[in-house]
Length: 334
Ligand SMILES: Nc1ncnc2c1ncn2[C@@H]1O[C@H](COP(=O)(O)OP(=O)(O)OP(=O)(O)O)[C@@H](O)[C@H]1O
Ligand SMILES: [Mg+2]
Image 1 (cartoon, protein in one colour):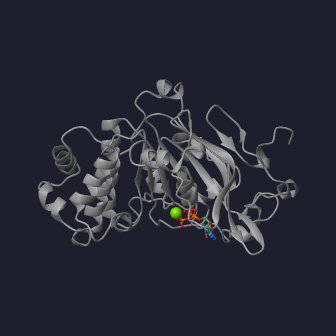
Image 2 (cartoon, rainbow, N blue to C red):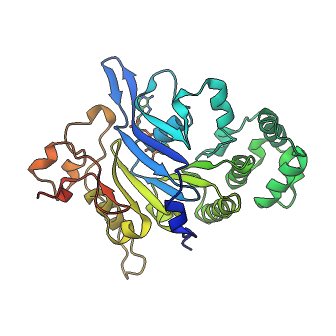
Image 3 (cartoon, rainbow, N blue to C red):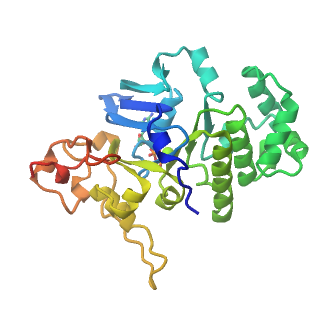
């Protein structure tokens, strides 16, 4: 089932929940700094599910971690750009201020729920610690039990008494959703939230996440390499390739008329389940590693539309109200 924005015009006129602008992240090597992302920019509007999609290694997780100020240390750093949560500059917050933003204003759901929980503590203690940290005023025990019930546990007390290793991957991900939603954040970052789960559980978790998102009216940054999930759940999306955003689009326009040759390749790689002989087409070639990022368009070696201009760097430019693309095929003078 597709989940559409309920009132699109009211969403488009509101202040973004998150504004990422020209974000460049690099890691240190013996030869100097190597850029992982290059001037990444996007906005997430209130109440929307914004997809960030791209092949493995293109910089999705590193972008998410930078929003949370959780970049791997030492060695990785933001070298330029800005990140605003509504009108607060995330990059200027102190360590303590940032701790209170995490969980309370930005909820997090990661691919490996087991890694996000402490294996030595029962679930209840971990949930309570979070409430205590954020000075939750109401009846904490009641709220926790309610939330666990809400995410599909008929017997919340049993879950609360369990240690993480006693729960399945799907159960842990439900606990993570409950934690992410506990303090009604205005943004949830969900980085491959269902990749570690089997397909049936995957669908249940996604449906639950979307249902809860609507209930508390939050926005989601939904990161995945799975375009079918984006097509089912996102309202708008950005496509990343080799550390750069190459296209930004609303979902319908992206599915029906993808702009960037890489986006077209991704869509063509989706199996057509209606066809008698569904076949996976793949984009020939490999995604380059950051140390091998070269001049010009980074997709040009894999692009069947590449021409002489592509040795220059294409900037992301608007081609419509909600469409942006970084490709010389769209340059007006051509
Ligand atoms: N500290 C680091 N040192 C060296 N390389 C790093 C470091 N952190 C990230 N990278 C590299 O940066 C690139 C982006 O990684 P990232 O994890 O953000 O990719 P991703 O798009 O989330 O991929 P996936 O779909 O596999 O999760 C990768 O090539 C990765 O190897
Ligand atoms: Mg990742």
